[in-house]
Amino acid sequence: MTRVIHTGDTHVGYQQYNVPDRRQDFLDAFRQVVADAVEDDVDAVVHAGDLFHDRRPTLTDIMGTLDVLETLSDAGIPFLAVVGNHEAKRDAQWLDLYESLGLATRLGGDPVVVGDTAFYGLDFVPRSQRDDLDYDFAPHDADAAALVTHGLFQPFDYGDWDAAEILTEASVDFDAMLLGDNHDPGKQRVEDAWITYCGSTERASASEREDRGYNIVTFDDEVRITRRGLDTREFVFVDVELGPEEGVERVRSRVGQHDLDDAVVVVSIDGDGEPVTPASVESFALERGALVARVTDHREIAVEEGETEVSFADPDDAVTERVRDLGLSEAARDIDETIRASKVADANVKDEVERRVRELVDEGAEAFETAAESAGDESDEATASDDSPADTDESAHPPADTGDTDDSAVATDTPRGSAADGEDGETQPDDQASVEEYL
View 1 (spheres, rainbow, N blue to C red):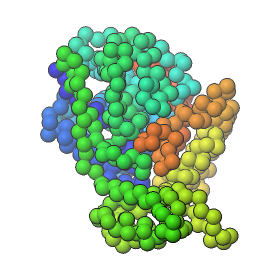
View 2 (cartoon, one colour):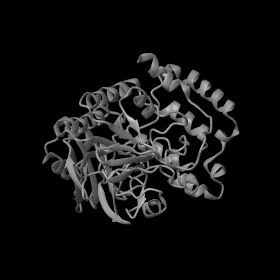
View 3 (cartoon, rainbow, N blue to C red):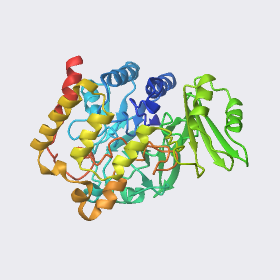
View 4 (cartoon, one colour):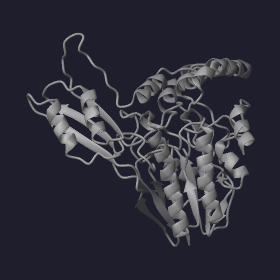
């Protein structure tokens, strides 16, 4: 018998709502998963991608994750993982760094046997590259086998990758597919195998209302999948349907009925009634102890010119979603990230942009091709779907899922377990070098 924790989409480093406390929450949730693994003495922790929220985590995020993985290593519990679209880099992955330190195993086409189960891995693969995969995996002699991978799979809602095709074409008979990317947990039976999403460990979007958690998967005579919840920061969801002549006082009254201490308060307004200024409701919630308050008014209310007020649940998410929809070149997205989304100090942005542009020029013209140019006939597919679900509250993913920051049209190195050999040779050396200096 082999019993593992199946987790993923931890998104360490995500400073949701630009609040440092939320950044810490994502690391704390991952730490809680590992604490449960040690307490339960499971055979392994299997991570299905998006350990980090983006491919340029800060040193604090890297060291915090290192500390969590050391806890797992000290207990003698292996950490088996694949690379998700959020954290994917062109060359070496952050997961490789932890593997070099003996704290992780990056799963691929060769089996990693734990107990009597062989585990394989397939990193996130953009849609435009999936036709090149042949799902050729090395044989094993274990009693069971599982494939760990990251993507949106059919027959789950919003799936763009057919799990049945993988199970049919793979050279190994898999008893289960342990998936990441969809932040909603779920399981289905396909081709005599269980395919299951573990869900995210923290709410990365206001649409993720259900409690967060992870899977416990047991491989014995059959595969058994159970779920365990995590104690994460409280989200208070207040849905207000306003009647005629009702307005801000009604909204405040509904919000005031809840315990708001240290909570993220998400208010949704529908119905009729008077215009409501989001800031007035948000300040009301903050005065009553909320950590964060966001108000979205879904009504279409005509207001006099000069009185229009625009509010986003998260401005960064709105900008990110718009940038993604523009279909920019990889070079443009990289520079946008450096200027707007990276952790580069403001005083150093100019020099950093100049350095990145020089690197991109050296890499060649491909980096400056737009998403449509690089994908050819599959341009619509590449610009709309090569990413995992958006982090925005208006996600294009399953309502409770996320993904975004970098559009992940950034090519990963050759997915382990795939047929596409060789790398594109384009590197970003500074990230790894800086970590090695500190370690």
